[in-house]
Amino acid sequence: MNIPSDIRYVSSHEWISLDGDIATIGITDHAQEELTDVVFVELPTVGKAVDAGDPTAVVESVKAASDIYAPLAGTIVEVNPGVEADPSLVNTDPYSSGWIFKIQVKDIEHYYKLMDAAAYKTHIS
Amino acid sequence: MDDGKTHGENEKMGLAMKRCAKLDLSQQGMIVPGFHLIDKLRVPFQACSVSDELKRTPLESAHIALGAKLVPFGGWNMPVQYTSILDEHAGVRNKVGIFDISHMGQFLVNGEGAAPWLDGLLTNKVHALQPGEGQYTLMLNENGGVIDDLIIYRTGENDFFLVVNASMIDEDYAWLSRHLASGVSLINESSAWAGMAVQGPESSVLFADVFPGETLPPRNGISTTSTGAIVCRTGYTGEDGFELFTPASEGVAAWEKFIAAGAKPCGLGARDTLRLEMGYPLNGNDLSPTRTPLEAGLGFFVDLSKEFIGSDVLVEQKAEGPATKLVALQYTEKGAPPRAHYPVQDKDGKVIGEVASGVLSPSLMTGIAMAYLPSGYAKLGTELNVDVRGRLFPAQVVKKPFYKRA
Image (cartoon, rainbow over the protein chains, first blue to last red):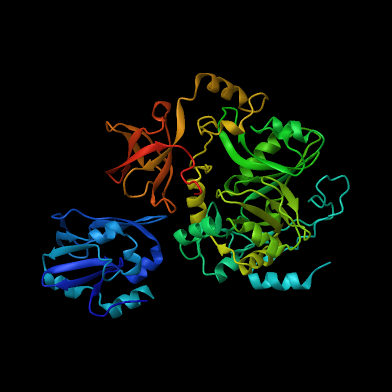
C-alpha cells in the first residue's frame, strides 16, 4: 500500500500535493485498489469554482461511478487529458500520471490542516 | 451412511449442513442413464448459514480463500470479482473461466402429463425436446409479461429439469404450484445443488482434464458424469462451455478441480459484461412482468402455434407489431459508461426511454446498452443520445450481439 509521505490526504481517499498555490489532486492507491478497473474519468471544467467537499470529478469502474471531491476551495486551473485518454493510469500510477485535476487554492494554510500520511494510514487500517 | 469426511469438511466451512444423499443412478426406464434425482430415501440438503440474513452458496469458502470481493446479490452473498472484472472477462473470452451459479434454482417435473402441462406454461416447444436436450424458454403471466426466463431440459420421456434465476426461485415455484395439473409432480431441488459454469474456448479441454474419458453433451444437451454430476452444455457468456451441478456437499471439491486444471475464477461482474456483450437479457433489467418476449426481441423462443398462459396477448401483439422494442445501443464515441435507468434521448432532446442494462464492453472498450424504445426508433443506425448525469453521449442502434468472435 503506497502512501507517499510528502503529500496530504482526505478521508474520502483523495491525495493532494501543493506547489505554490496550485494543488494537484488524485485518488490514493487504497482507493484505486478498492475500485479496481477504472474505465472512465469525468473531468471538471477548467475555470470552475469549487468549495471543499464539492463533488468535482467522477471516476468510473465497471460496476460503479464514484464522486471525487475537491479537498480545498479554489478554482480548477487544469485537468489531466492523460486519464481521459487512458483511465487505467488511475490504477497503475495514481500519484503521478494518474492525477485528475489541479486547483488554484484560496487558502493555502488549509492544506496543512489536512491528514498527513501517518494519519491517512491510520484512517484506512 | 454418515460420511465422517464430509462432516469434517462441513465443519471447516463453518456451516451446519445436513448430509445430501448420493443420487440413485440405477433408476430404470430412464432414457438418459444415471440421471434422476428422485429418491424416496434421499434427505434434502439444507445449508444453515451462520448469519440468517444473507444466503450463502456451498462454494463460499472457496471464494473467501481466493480473496473474492463478496457482495449481496438477490439475498445471496456472491463474488462480484476476484481480481478484476476486465481480467476475468478477458479470461473467459480467451481461455476459460468458472462462475459459482449455486444460487440458481432447480426444479424437477415428472409425470405422464408433464410435457403438455409445461407446454401450457412455457413459450418454447417443450414437446420438441428429445431426452437429453434442453432449450431456452420463458414463463409468462396472463398479460404476456415475463415472470422468468429459464432453461428446460428433458431428461426422460416424462421427466424435466428446469434451471431458473436465483431471484425468482420462490415466485417461479409458487406460480408452477398454483397451476399444477394432476398427475404431474413438481419438486424444488434448489438447495440440494451446487452449481458452477465453466465457460470459454478451452472449457471442453478442462472437462476432459477433470472427467477423463467422459464426453460433454452436445450444445444445449444434458447428461450426467460418472460421479453423478449433471452437465448442461449451455452458458450465459456466448462462449463454448457447460454448467455443472453437483450435490451441494461435493461442490467445493469439483470447483477446486476446475481451478487446479486452470479455470480462472470469475464473479458476477464479469458474468454481466459477458452476457450483455451477447445481448442476452437479464430478468429484472431487460425482462419484466410488464414486457412481453416479443417486445424483448425473443420471438424466436416463442411458439404461437400452441396455447400457453399469455399466448393470446402475444398473438394479438404479433399481428399489430409491438409498440416498444428492446433495442441494442452502442456508443459511437468515447463516453461515460451507460448504466441502468439513464435516460435515452432522440437527437431532438426528447426522452424516449431509459437504459435497461448498460456497461462498458470490455471487448469493444465502448459503451453498450439495451433499452426499451418506441418501435419507430428500432431501425439499425438510428442515432440517439444517452444522458449520463446530465452529459449526452452519442450512440447508435446496432444489431445484436455486440461482440462477435473474430
